[in-house]
Amino acid sequence: MKSRFVILIVLMLSLLFFTSCKKKEVKAPAEKAVNVRVHAAEKKSLRPFLDTTGTLNPYEEVIVSAEVDGILKGMKVSEGSIVSKGTILAVIDDIDYDLEVKKVDAALKQADANLANTKLEYQRKNALFKEQLVTQQQFDDVSTRLSLAAAEVERATASLSLAKQKLLKTLIYSPLAGVVKEKKVERGNYVKNGTALFTIIQTNPIKLNFSVPEKDTGKLKAGQNVFFTVDAFPQREFKGKVSVIYPSLEEKTRTLLIEALVPNPSGILKPGLFSHVTLHTGSERGIVLVPITALLYEGEKIRVFVAEGDRAKERTVKIGQQYKLQSSVRSPQPPGNEYIEIIEGVKEGELIVTVGQQNLFEGAKVNVAR
Image 1 (tube, rainbow, N blue to C red):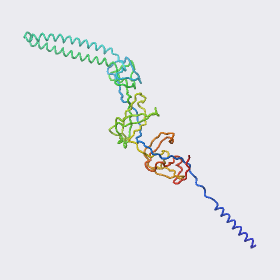
Image 2 (tube, rainbow, N blue to C red):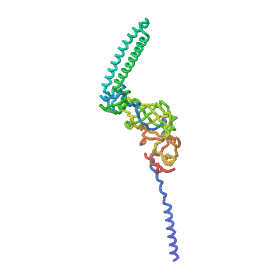
Image 3 (cartoon, rainbow, N blue to C red):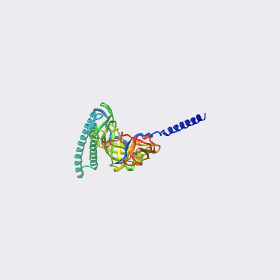
C-alpha cells in the first residue's frame, strides 16, 4: 500500500515536469511586416509660382450702330465673318440722301451766282459812292446784300457738307480689324440713328484676365510672363505678358484682378475660354520634393513615414508649394506626377513611404516592395 502511494506521487511529479517543459517550448508569434512602396525624396531646382484660373476676353469689343435713318438695303457680313478696318458691313437705302445732296448742291450754286452778281453791283456802287453819285443809303443797302449773299453761300456750303456726310453714312464700315460676334438686324429692317447693328471683337492679341490672392500681390509686376492652358487644347501651353495690374482689390474676395496680353495670330484662342494660369514669381531655387500621395493629414498636423532599414519612422513635416513634374524613362514619376515641397522634416535621398503608410506606426516593421 505504501509502495503504491510512492509510485503515484512519482507519476504526478513526472507529468508536471513534462507539462512545464512543453510550456517552455512554446515560442512567441513572429512580428508581421507591413508591405509598402517608397520613393526617394528628390532635390530639384524649380521656380516658385502662383497657380490660379482665368478667362479669355477680346482685346477690343465695339457695337457698330446706324448713324442715319433708313431701310437696310444690303448686309455684307454675318456672324463669324473676319473683317478688316474699313470693311463695309451693311448698306442703308441712300435714295433720299442722294436727292438731298443734289438739292443742296443746286441751292449752293444759286447762292454762288447771287453772290457773284451782288459783288459786281457792290463794285459799281462803291465806285459811284466815291464820286458821290449814289447816296449813303444805296451804298449801305448793297453792302448789306453782299454780306447776306456771302452768308447764304456759307450756309449752303455747310448744308452740302452735312448732306454728303449723311450720304456717306448710309455705308456702315467696320471701325477695327476683327470678327463679327453678333449681327443684330436683317436686310429690310428699318433702322434709326443709334440702332445697334453689329458687335465686332478683336482677338489678336487676346486678353487673359485672372485674379490672385491678396497675400501674393507683392510678387507681381507688369511684363511678367504668364503661362496657361485651356481645356480645348490640354496638351498645349500658351504664353502671354502681364499688361495691367488693377489698382484696387475686390473687397468681397480679397483678390486683385490682373490682365495679360496673349498673341493669337491664328485665332485658335476664343473669348470666353476657361484657362489654368501659372505665373512664376521668382528665380530657380533648390527644393526637396516628395510625392503628394505620401502625406497623412491629422488636423493641422501633416505626417510622412520614412523607411530606415526594415523599420518605419514617423516625421512631422512642413509643406510648401505643389508641383507637377514630367516623367522620364530614367526617372519615372508616380501616378499623377504631383509632388509637394517639403520645407522641414525630410532630407534629400530619404525613402518616403507612398503606399501602405495608413497601416504604419512609429517603429513598425516594413517590407519594401521592389
